[in-house]
Image 1 (cartoon, rainbow, N blue to C red):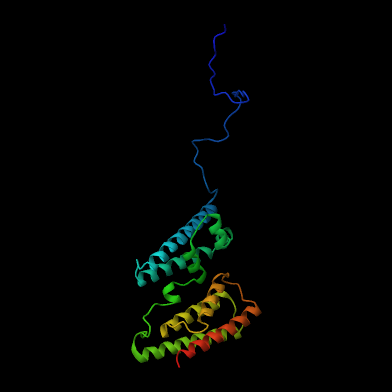
Image 2: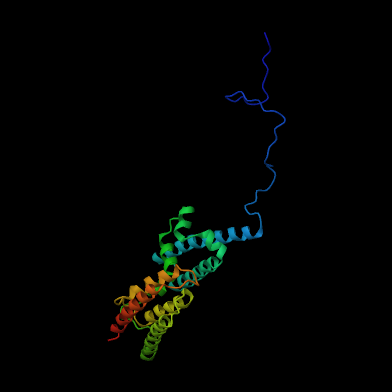
Length: 238
């Protein structure tokens, strides 16, 4: 009888015997690097920050709905997160890697409906639709109210002038629209006719690149919609 010989390795289904001539191609003691250079590292850090901003914004929106955070703290924090989000995407390489909000959510399996709405609008909920008690004054008496009315009207007129002068880029129109809705909200908390069109155009512009222009057709639609919104605003003053 032959003595049973113990194998020095675990047998495989195909009775493969490793040879000493083979060597590992991966050094298990070597640190695995996700980035090959500083540019790649900066890119990954920016994408990670955007991910963190989106998740934090979702938690903030939920907390605000539950009255777990004050309006002041919510507004300050939300404004800061939105600013950081835009700042990261201002870099062309980050914007290309990011793609779109929907594709980024899909890639990283993010379920953030409230953050998605806030990022599309680009304004805190307290600025988009302030929550004052019905009939409550905006503060400061009749003189302040008149000042807010004039400011809102001036913002509408500035917007109309920009369109007429063919100043149709996002970085021109978006700030004017933001100032317009903020001024309008200081006058009234009523959801007047066609006010929603201001928010819809904020969403449209917010999804554009800073230097991107509206088309001629979009400019005519914006002019038409803002005329309707301005008429709706003036109707609240009668």
